[in-house]
Length: 308
Length: 292
Image (cartoon, rainbow over the protein chains, first blue to last red):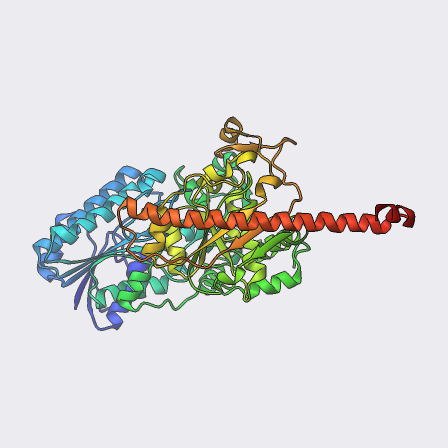
């Protein structure tokens, strides 16, 4: 199958591309970022997904499937720019899929869509509303991109659309929101709170995306690996020290004393859990995670040891 | 092993048939260590401080989904704590009853954390349904916060029952095991509820007792379980139908409260009799003769 991956330059994009190449697919990538050691079989286009040149790739290559991974998830990018990339990019991907006869489009989204709040259900199902819009406004562009992708399910009936809501990624590359949060020697926690964190190894993330393609899955699916563990366990399991701070001190200390810088909305995610029920995805694809939470944390710990 | 954990109870926690991971945490956040600490403390209250009398525990299934539905008794959650403790100590293998806590608990530092680590979750239909889907034992007080707000004279009465539990039980085909709890009103004889203080702490209210705070007195408690009740349907039936079923459960619980009250009266009478006898035994022979 000819598969186009917008956002191929990211850690997960590269993993998925290598995996698909091994499986005998023809892989084409679009990304503004370079991928220097890309395997020879992968055709790369160094263009912005929102620009005319990206549409040319669709027109000339006529991919059968598209795996959209060109969303910005880290919070370093300024919000206005993130909006343009995440919403403009997603719109462009689905318009090109419609115009150039793509059969299957996969949108790789995040489980943070559901938001974290004291009165949220512990296990979110796919039909739950996107509460992150109110609990974590800085993520609203990702939520909007997810919802836009969902509209393709009824707007584009000829296109098989899959929306995947993946839990946090943790593994040796240190890619992802959780991995970035854990990077320092000390990890701040809110005193009196220790929410469950749901994460899976990056290899399992790649496996799940490839399975969604292989099974030609249609619909919205939560994707999770091992069962969630408390944040304090993640912190210790990755060789870090938790620093429980009263909420007022927590707000004041962020971005100082070597602690990570976080937007205000992130506080809810450190107080309350965002956990998903991925039974539907497992039932539809037969997905079984290969790496448990202990090994995922161990690999991260080995790749990013705490010095001193 | 912590000093606050009895090794025997820790071994009993190990026998809970729950999918604890390598870190001793189950998928809902309940932790083996916290449970062992909790039940070490609760055993003292269950066996010695309150001396809980339990009848009908055989109706609580040792595995599979079930819903324990009962009355609130006492201004704070002594009832829930003792129900959980009875399921843990009186069943083999032990079972963890999981309650649906008030939403304010999750927002309160430490309190929400303590509840989660003990397997007690925020009272939401979605969470309850997920627990039942996972074949857990759910504990529900359909009176809600209105039930714990009962004052001393109303201690053995029932207030309005919500109907959500019935719809959920029918939808998930879960047997309801009614229970009646007696004595909580004597342990915490509420003379008033301070809603202003409650607002201050983020709770619905704070119960006031003759001695001020809601510290429970060491009184005898009675817990009576009855045979399961099952209701056929999808849970989407009209309100009148559901209300009828709820009324049946309420009536059963009212009966169980009476059974518990009677048992409590007898137990107290027996204990008073035994006390009298012990006092008489200890007194000089002449006094005994006089009494005869």
